[in-house]
Image 1: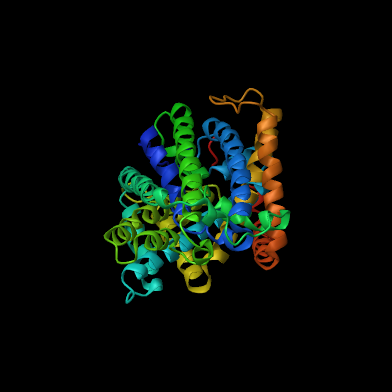
Image 2 (image 1 turned 45 degrees about the horizontal axis):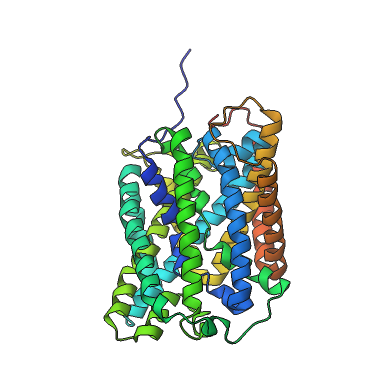
Length: 439
């Protein structure tokens, strides 16, 4: 009797510092652009309220999510948790939502990268830069996870330093009267409409779960990576948003993809060396997130293919134990989104996927607590069940608001889910008894 070949396995090479860099790097572009669209629908005060609500959502969610990630350290992340809790269909829904989140975040970041380059060099088209980013960073990721993580560490440290520099430059020019000027009434509809853009401040931090299978000592390392990463992001998000709103007319910044360089140009002048310098190194924050989300979607595609949800060739690894076909396939989807979407639309689609994934993951937490009380849980969410219930309630409210204000995009998301689920059921994949999901 021949022994069946082992399922493809990823290399364990990541440290707590790597995880901090990946966690912060995945998200940090959200501090550079995207959030400012929230000003357009709610004004600075209404958006501040939305940001505080979303900060509570992410603090409670990451506490809850860390329990799942340390108990089930799989490259599938939410797909693995939902499959274990609810079976193949639950795994499919979580996997689809996670793919939408991580496949549609990179095009938005690539648009911003192109916009920053265009801000510096107006002759360079935004789209060409964005497409070039996909080619370059897919090649970097093909080198291997340790090399990719080291690259993330360098650019993330530079990006954090740059945001601290930005806050130092604009803080002396902050005026409360500017922040409160041109007031927009703080209303529930305005706050709800701003929630997707507040979520952009933190979106994708949960992508650390996608590399959990590549972490040395995951049960000790992952809580540290998540905790330090979230603390860093909360400080940066609130600091950047409040200070930027007080340097001039916030309405001027509410519809562009490069609000921070523009804010500096208001304060220091467009010809200032600091403005040009910041716009140049501002690319580091966008690069960190773009690179991190590529790691995230490639591991999710790999895990779904390894589990039988996607074509098997997407689970193949190259000589450096990197899922090369998953990288290429995810990049192809991103390029299509670049050619057909706009920044705010792809942000909303990405946030839709994230919120559905958060809800399924939180439900998985409750189900596994009930069904597998003896599962080894190196980290348990403090304040259970209140903390995950707060996260679940805020996620449901945020999803409801997002759907209400974006019916067309929500319909597209739902149609994609139902269509692919129908194919999945017709192919009979849900009846497979052996799915390669890590226990």
